[in-house]
Figure 1 (cartoon, protein in one colour):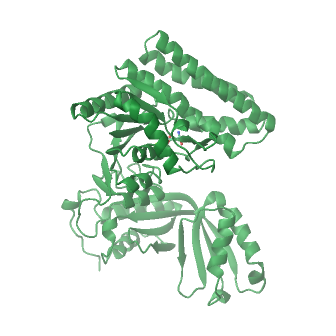
Figure 2: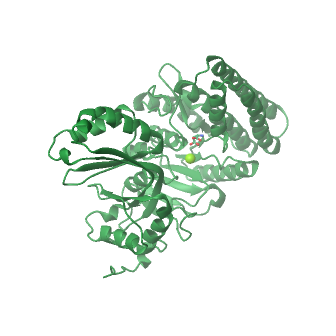
Length: 485
Ligand code: ASP
Ligand code: MG
């Protein structure tokens, strides 16, 4: 049994839907021929829809009642446009139109009540933002039926039971497993392809939640784990995971194989291929994940497994950048040997809910620096100034300095573990390109070396690192270039 998830661009237009139908049909036929029928489809919202829904809710909260009314029409047209081309006129199309109108009626009522309240809660955002998938799934199911498959749209609120952390809910595994098996297995046994909404779930009490932006990948992995799938396929619009962002590094290539650990690291550091949590359920059940291209379905894409096939020692797999960051430095001679500064620093940071992406402390203990997203920098500085008011007054801490225009570059590969000289090559590459490295960190897992650079150095640094490790070549063809003397 396989779970196939289609992203927003894969369901972005009528042409894309046609590709998806062909891909699902081929998979269903292959599975039937092997005597292991069973294909579960998970879909994202049509591209751009989730953003639009969130924007409408936000504008409603500011009292704008016009925007969501206009968008209601746009959304109807967008979905009807696909239906008009791919679903024959008749009862099937009429039922679909009815579903769209119902969902969009819900959208209207929700935005109107948000406008009355003048306030948008995370819970409210979840209900509105999940509507995109609830429009896309019935549409895709109808398109698959029009292509001759038996398919049924299912809302994940019936399947994925989550906690009540709105905006990034986590599944409750046991309940989710039970519901998925009870609802989906009978369909699969009858040769029906369930078309499940990605991104959404519901609490035990049935209150709608979302798994976080880009969360449909995660939905697919949750269903895959619940059903003990043979493979989880993430169908997107690129040929798998690449050695770097091809818009920045033109000779980037797709990777044949990655480990769960590597892909999690890449996702965490800004590579936009997979939702960072996707591998967690896959790891738990040791299910391979494959990233494939809807628009070039014969490309093998990238296979993600527990241990990537033995590659030569010291293999760097990819380099990625995470942008729009602030570097915060807490510095002072008086910090030396004073216990608890680090704990208090990160305690203060945690209180404002900021996500720390990288930490580095010099051994002289005269400064701690760490990286947070731009959006939380001001709150973090405030919290630290309050926390260390006394130390600042007594000049044990000299300053709490925020610095913007910061980026983290992450060089990733589990083959780096135990291989000497890799950090030297990374730094030789950036030095040769005349780039100033502001801070450095390597986790003891040795699966990533991170460096901090300013905005204008991101592109040259990514290219220099990609070049020095010859990432444009398959591993077997790389020469081991000597370090410059
Ligand atoms: N539609 C949701 C989003 O845009 C989930 C997804 O596409 O994975 O974030
Ligand atoms: Mg996505």
